Amino acid sequence: MQLSSLWGKQIIAKKKLKDSETSYTNGLLRARYNDSEWTPARFKSFITSALRTATRKWPPKYKALKEACIGRKVNKATNKMAYHYKCAHCRNLFVQKDVQVDHIAPVVDPRMGFEGWDIFIDRMFCEKDNLQVLCKTCHSVKTQLEKKERTLRG
Ligand SMILES: [Zn+2]
Image (cartoon, rainbow, N blue to C red; front, side, top):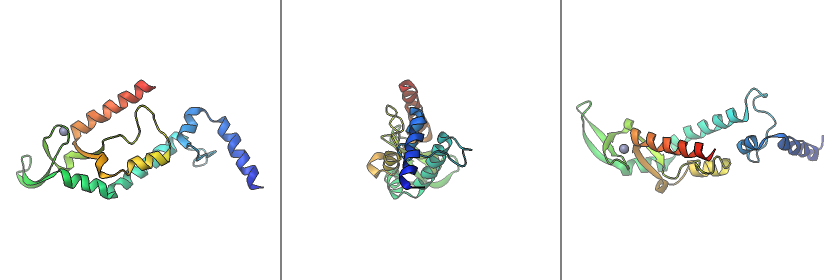
């Protein structure tokens, strides 16, 4: 089989996909994922979660945490010395397990939806200036607001 006919097949397959499906693939067209056992949405969430795991090793994330660290003080819950971090929103102090590093401009723009993997990766692995430390409560409020905006967009 010639390469050109392979490309032809891909183009035909792309036309058959609905808009909602092509938005998952964004150019990286696949006829099937895991022998068609997975939907494009399942594949997308698989890749998203793998990328999120990789951010654990992304140095700017640690720079953001370090910047929010106010030093060691007594943790009221345990009565032991522990590093505390200032939430960028409520300004209260928390131990590390109670804070999260947040993307100030979200990885997926709620008004635009998923815009493709290039943009997704670029924003996921952003520089420190787009990262902030939030306590779990503030982070969850922000996430809910973004979700709401996404739903309103439809
Ligand atoms: Zn907070």
